[in-house]
Structures are given as structure tokens and as C-alpha cells.
Image (cartoon, helix red, strand yellow):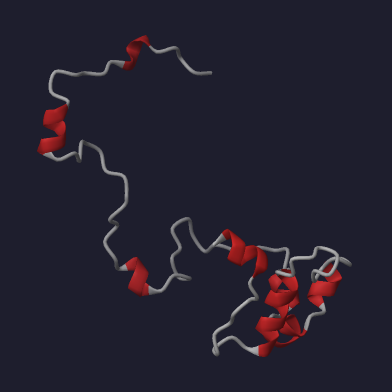
Length: 117
């Protein structure tokens, strides 16, 4: 894999457009002296990929979007907000009984630990 990264040519699928191929090839040029952007960020900004696919004025806007409320989820698709929160923190032990049995007789008392500042 390492040798392929160092030596093999880039291979793109047919779904990758010519502008995307060009910018990726330029950014991944192995010789830093020939790499896209060696003459500054403006060289990258002027690349046809950005002219055709990216609105740089919107992409570089300094003001973040205002939140309507602390728990405003209007910018999230309901397919995601309707999902059950599987990885959310829940109090209590969620170790299976088999795993808990492996620690039978052990206990932890953190009261003797130094208090962190």
C-alpha cells in the first residue's frame, strides 16, 4: 500500500468529473514544487473546480447561521431526528451479567484520589 501511494498513478472512477480529477491530481502531486497551491491559496481558489461547483462567497461567510433556539433541529432531516439515540449516555451499568461476573469481588472507591484543580 505504501509503495502504491508513493509510486502508482491516481486512478479515478468514471463518475469523477474532469474538474474534480484535475483538482485532486493537483493537490496530490507528489512533487511539492509542482503541487497545486505551491504559489498560494489563490491558485487553488482559481481552479475551475471551484468556479463550477463551489460558491466561495458562501463557503467563506464569516457569520454563522443564527440558531432559533437551543434545541433547534430544523436543519436536520427528520430521518435522523426520529432515530432512537443508541449511543447516548445513560446512567447505570450496561455491562452484561457475564462481564460483571468477571469482576466479582472487585470494587472501586475514588474517595482517596487527589482532587483535581
